[in-house]
Image (tube, rainbow, N blue to C red):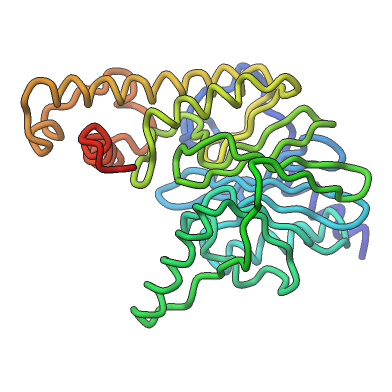
Amino acid sequence: MRLAALLLFAATATSMPAQSTVRTADPAARGVPLTAFPRFVKLSDKVYGYEEIRQPGFTTVSLVVIGRNGVLVADGQGSVQATQTMLDKIQTLTPLPVKWYVVGSDHGDHTAGNSVLPKDIRFVVHANSLAQLRKDSAAAVAANRPAVIVPTAAMTSDTETLDLGGITVRVRFLGRAHTGGDLMVEVPSEKLLFMSEAYLNRVFPAMRSAYGAEWVRTIDSALALKNVDLFIPGHGFIEDAKVSREELVAFRESLLAVIAEVKRLKAAGLTVDQAIAQVNWGPYTKWFLAEQQSPIAIRRLWTELDGASK
């Protein structure tokens, strides 16, 4: 049985990518077939990234940390089936139970499968995300959809340290970014930071519920952490340490460019619909999901510039 598990893991795991790999969130352009997913990316003997494909064909990333006392997962997947598959594959790494779950993002592409998590699991969630999950659950019940899983309590400070047994993680709130309650998971012994949707690797900034200017400052806080070499995104591919920092800086630059372009269009006296029609994203036009996310970003930043997205 153990041999079968190891063979299954060998068939679904991958090593860190070479620096010569094409820098894109598009699996086809990167040369990775969709049949390669879901897969683990081994970051150390105790830490793995988990890359799964979501439509329209880019990765949703979860973090798995294995301690002597159990397993921590940061961010689930976008459906019950996808999250159950992840839990099943974690069992090929360790027989230990999943005991901790960090809500890095409260969006459905990371939380919609949470109903299959162990019933006694300990959630770590920011108060802002907890409030959003409560709203989402009420809306789901009113629409006769399955209720959203809502944790019972939020973390009480901006940093919470968890001892998993032989390995420690720090759950950090560095500020609002993609959502109001973005949480990141630092593993000090491995010098890595899982940033959830605060870092979208080569994916056009998704701003449905974002805070543009604050997002930039949140990334600055992540880049300033002294003991972090590897930055792991919530979407897009996991890179090696050097490239991960370069790509996080590139993503920060994309945010600044998007904000600047919306400010330019607004200052020109255009309506928001005119801005959507006339926008010029320059090189970011080719980033994954640019066409889909463009009008969403413009409308959200327009609202933010009007002071209505507090």
